[in-house]
Amino acid sequence: MADSRYLFHVTEEYEDERIDKYISVLIDSLSRSFIQKLLKDGHVLVNDQPVKQNFRLKEGDEVVFSLPKAVEPDILPEDIPLDILYEDDDVLVVNKPKGMVVHPAAGHYSHTLVNALMYHCRDSLSGINGVMRPGIVHRIDRDTTGSLLVCKNDAAHISIAAQLKEHSIVRRYRAVVYGVLDQEEGTVDLPVGRDPHDRKRMAAGVRNGKEAVTHYKVLQRFHGYTYIECRLETGRTHQIRVHMEAIGHPLLGDEVYRRNMPGNGKPPCQLQGQTLHAMILGFRHPGSGEYIETVAPLPQYFSHLLQILDSKRG
Image 1: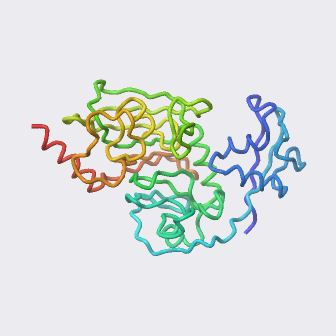
Image 2 (image 1 turned 90 degrees about the vertical axis):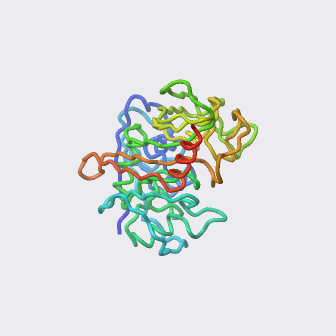
Image 3 (image 1 turned 60 degrees about the vertical axis):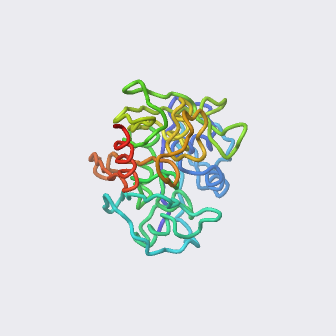
């Protein structure tokens, strides 16, 4: 199979931008090391000439780059059942269960969503994100459940990545937080970046953090807890968890982001990680342009928790 080839024309806003940064903006799912390798191997041309990673662009430059066919990964396909909400030749939406890691990494080379996808899709997964993450264009945390969009080819990946970049993909989550929110709805607009005091955590309002916006709406109030819907405008790492902690309402069950927690912090029942579910996912189909929306039903543990909280209101 031939490499995938893409062409872009530099607009005024990217005048004097470094080529490596420009590519990362076009496709923010590509890792820095992957982009550096593309440039080093001569897969990136500006005005028909190969360039180095520190090359600076001018308005009107023609940027062409090729994404090599993915090398067959050492990750093995595994016959793991998938709850598929939507599927065609370009994309699929899977309802990820709690506890499943999305892609292989150190310590998790099997039993991941990617292992299951490789078995289900065979050779039909995009290779843009490298051999460890075939098909993966965005992620949700291990203990977050719900909708995840997977791309079966590079053209679909480019289209979905662009929609993520322009914030046009609809992502609505359900969550239960500590404390009772006063307002019916609100917006958290705080940049998110690495916590300078703990590099394993993300933090809100940090210097050099990336823009992050989360809209929330109250669905139901309980004694000491609130059931909410969160709509992502951006998609930073751990964004909802970080933002809700920042306003004093961490997610129920979250073992990492639990500062500013009201009360004793003890959940009303046994939980495995944060109570967060990616329920609604809406996107423009990369081929037809048709709007597609999927709904992942609340998992059993989540519905059970709501029943417990409701029973304690009286």
